[in-house]
Image 1 (cartoon, rainbow, N blue to C red):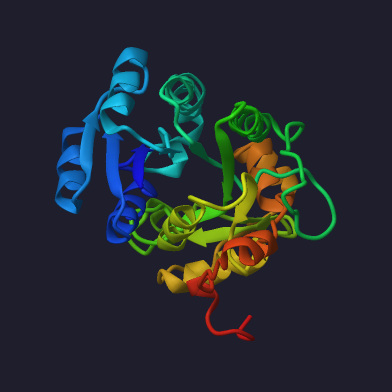
Image 2: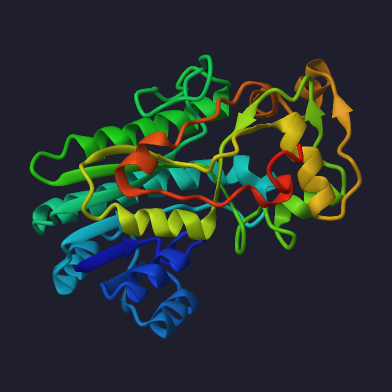
Length: 306
């Protein structure tokens, strides 16, 4: 199958391209980076070195690739999560405007299927784990709400594209090589410096997915029924559980604990939302539909060790 991957040199893009090539697909990776282009070429992918903001170049790259499937993994995130607030406007612009160019080009080129990166952790509040019917948390704290609205726009775009099949993959928080959540990642450094506290009761539930498991799942949805799929592991965990375990895993001291009031005063309402209000999501649809088998969140240890 001829597959065009945008954001191909990013954290999810690289293992995804490697997995698609391993399965024998003809892959073109879109990147705006010289270094990214070299890495993708070494994996055996074709290269489209263009900017997502250059609509004409994006369409020409798609025509050259004769793509049957487009996978949109466009993001513009910083190397350190402490810079996320400053990076958020640029990330939204890339997803909405750059991704819009890609989506319109895919429709113009007669692409059969468009697969969109979405969010499995900014979901509307409710009891238990959220399934794919849950809406995004567009009324959450300010920055969370903005990000949720961005993903809501992306989902609406991909799922209402006429004859082109749309798939939205609601990934959990990425962890593993090349991500923030890895012993060599920026979040591990923050935790070692004790910059990441448990806020209040630490009841915010985070859904995770190992980066290579996410790549395998994405390669698996090339032919499944269109729609929304949660791509998360089996271990949605409250901050009060996963953060101390992650600290131990990366050789850090136990994280500090602060009240919600202290957090609002020092780091803001968004941090309180992450720490106390996030809702985990269920992967049962992905398991039923394409046999998704995620690994256990590695820093929680063996089953029953919590």
